[in-house]
Length: 473
Ligand SMILES: Cc1cc2nc3c(=O)[nH]c(=O)nc-3n(C[C@H](O)[C@H](O)[C@H](O)COP(=O)(O)OP(=O)(O)OC[C@H]3O[C@@H](n4cnc5c(N)ncnc54)[C@H](O)[C@@H]3O)c2cc1C
Image (tube, rainbow, N blue to C red; front, side, top):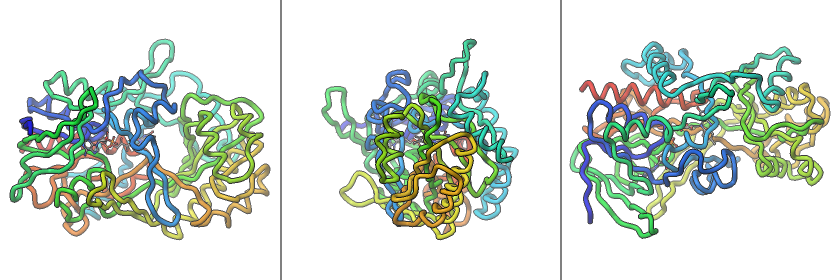
């Protein structure tokens, strides 16, 4: 079997992996980044298109956490990870959460000032900005609805750079940190899936991988490394560690931001190429309201979730946008690697209070959309009333049940928490796996709880802090 030697092995090239790689490579370490998914040029496929789902998503976008109700989720699987497919909405970790997490999970040197400093540096490096002009119609309706109801709404900045004509380009990892890491000498192996870590006592010596060559043939390789950073995301990092026999506090405590949706029909055409930048934050942190991808296929899927005839609304899809309410859930889940299967079993248990927050979020979202001029609302609740007036929303309170609610999420965190409390945490305060001298995790898994805001900024700030700490040792 071919062996590849490296000083640092980074597994996964998303928000956490790319940040780790650039920090270590630019500090002069010899870094190899291994990514299971393919290398797809950021401009090769249309954002939010079917082609993008096929090229850049794991399982073409379909995966689910089992539970009552089950929760569909999606993840990127390509060079750059989920940053290639996400909406780029950027929100620093709220400082009150940082304080809470530090004391609850006993995390050393974890304070708002440090994380803000890391986030500010990343914002300068990537380019994080608000729209240079007025928002698109699909986003403005959220602001208009909130204003009419006297609710708070905000335009979120995004990881975008704008040219002088106002055209925005999302600053994904494949456009930013990965090219920088490669320029500093890092090596990137796309189409290369790490199947198992190799261990000797309290050290990892490297990993076994399956590399798919350009001609489709597969080669088994072994990567030998002095240090390993596992950055496969909140589902695949714990699965890889478990498959490798590392199990203590690994894979428990998974957190999601469950979302419930509405396909809203307006008496005017709305835009479909982007995702709303406005958020209604009146009810945060319990729940927030925002907009989803709303191409024809997304509209069709969202309409179908009410399970009533929807041909007429679909024919009018240019007037339909998809919106959601996302809750900060009290429930939690687990990731369990199953021998012989490439993907782990994922479960999630919502609490009764979570379901009632989802119902509250759905009704509030309905109110905002009606206030913004929507004439017909299809909720993602099987058999629920299609609402045309505020009075119709009342029936939704009882309709949101474990059997009828169709939920999904794109935010997955907390499956390998960081901190010094061994029974709660899988790693120390800086992502080193408890009991191992040279094995680290540095991705969404480390966040001790759901952040209640878009997680990429927090994930990258923590990953950058942990890389800096590693370099000082
Ligand atoms: C559709 C969508 C929209 C989103 N919108 C936003 C948003 O607007 N704002 C925001 O802040 N967040 C958003 N997110 C979430 C955000 O993108 C993620 O939280 C973040 O990218 C997670 O970072 P990560 O490094 O943990 O994992 P990822 O970025 O998912 O990267 C993990 C990478 O590791 C690879 N990998 C896994 N296992 C292996 C293995 N065994 N061997 C080799 N490689 C492996 C995967 O293929 C993947 O490429 C969105 C996510 C999605 C899917």
